Every structure is written in C-alpha cells, then in structure tokens.
Amino acid sequence: MRLPFLNPDRPGADHVVPPTGFTARLTLFTAAAMAFLAVFALALSLATGRLAHRWADSLARSATIRISAPPEQMDAQVASVMEVLKTTPGVASERVLSNDEMKTLLKPWFGPDLPVDALPLPKLIAVTETAQGVDEEGLRLRLQGSAPGAVFDDHTRWRRPLVAAAERIRFLGLTSLLLIFGAMAGMITLAAQAALAANGQVIATLRLVGARDAYIARAFVRRFTLRGLAGATLGMALGTAAVALLPSPDAAGGFLTGLGFTGVGWFWPLIIPPIAAIVAYTATRFAAARMLRRIR
Image 1: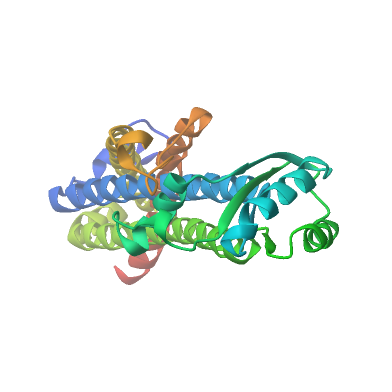
Image 2 (image 1 turned 180 degrees about the vertical axis):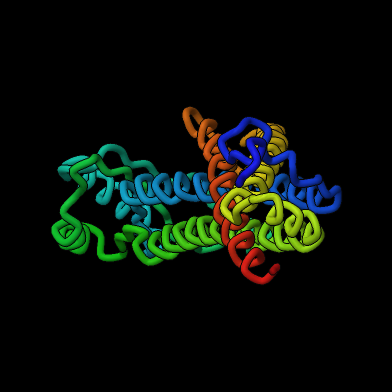
C-alpha cells in the first residue's frame, strides 16, 4: 500500500528528498554561468548577422574607378570618366576622392606623413549605384573608349571574403550556443547523479514505504529543473546588463559597431531560461532513470 504523501502530484512532494547543498550550488552556478555566456554568444551571432547584411548591401551598391595616366592627361581622363558616369543608367552619384581622402586610405600602410601631392598616385572615383545597378560590361567598354587608363572595380574580390567572414563568425556564435547548452546538460547530469548517489539510503527507504521510481525521479527532476531555471534567469539578467554596458558604436570603433542587441532583439535573451529549464529537465530525467536502475 502506498502512503498518501507519496502522491507525485501532491504539492511539495519533492521535499521528501533531502536537499544537498553542493549539488544545489553547482546546478545554480552552472546554469547562471552558461546563461551568461549564452547571452554573449547570442549577441555576437545577431551582430555579425546584421554586419554581414550591412556589408553585403552597402558594398554591393558601391564601386571604384581607378584612373592611371600621365600627369598631363590625368585631368582630361577624369573629366571624361565623370561625363560617362553622368550618362550611365544605374549610377546614383559619383565623386573624385580628394588628396586628404587618399592619404587616409593609405595611412594604415605608409603612415601619416605620406607626401600624397608629390607621388604619382592614380585618381579614384567613388561610384554609388542605384538599387537596379549598372551594366558593368557596358560601362567598362565605354570607359575603355573614353579613358583608356580607367579601370572599373565593383569590389567583388574583397566584398565576398568580408561577408563570408561575418557569416562564419555568426555560425561560430550559434555553434557556441549549442556547446554551452551541451556543457550545461553535462554538468547538471553529473550534479543529479551525485545527488541521487548521496541519497541512496533515502531512496531505499522511500521504496520500502511504497514509493515508485517514477515518483522518486520526478522529485529530483522537479528540483533540478527549478534550480536550472533560477540560475539561468540570474545569468541571463547579468549577461543582458553586461551587453547593455558595452561601449556605444562611436566610442567602440568599427569592430564593435553594432555589437549587442537592437530593437526587438533585446527580447531574444528571454528564451535562454526556458531552454535552460528544458535542458535541466531532460538531463535530470536521464540521470535519474539511469541511477535508479543502478541503486537497488
């Protein structure tokens, strides 16, 4: 005959299992730490996704025309190229880069004291395309006839590697999320197994008074699931606050521009605690079923 307090649906039924301080602290700390890291992995994935789209959109509509010609022909060829661009469908704007802009572009390689005016550098014309784009082959033929020293570059050679790199970082961020939750499952499984092993005598006593393994397992699963949920909620809150305290785009520079959450993206961290609870539930259920078969 089973005693009434062994009803698994009875509120507080999991209290028949004595709490174990070490496993409780381990579960809370593991869930909090992994949720904290998951927030940053999620922020990195979302940021690099936005960065890849921004690079793809902006660079896809930009191009450069490089003009290499003798000094006495340079101005004439620049004027010819500008006339061609003004009559080319799909060109939204065009402008010749100034010497200061050229100096800024070359500064990372040659330093700030580069004498731009004294060097035979080519002229660069920045071209912005419309959403429809330009007929690149037709434009190259027109440039060849009007300015033999002009070369049209649509940035494809270095645009694709940049976008591919951002997409790979995004993939690594998502992979990190899977690894984080996998590590959480492993740690909670070990903690649940330790708790079950430490309560071997209690489990034997419960069996003597009519408790079934399903009831015992449910008590442990409930306790560890709630611990995982509580720890993940704390870690998620701390991680989100840390992301909010990151430097602004202007202060952080180009690499950190946009790193974090924007708009409705701030709601994404809210999915971490429920996922952590599901991971804790699954891991504890597996550990309980395995350990109860061994404890006889």
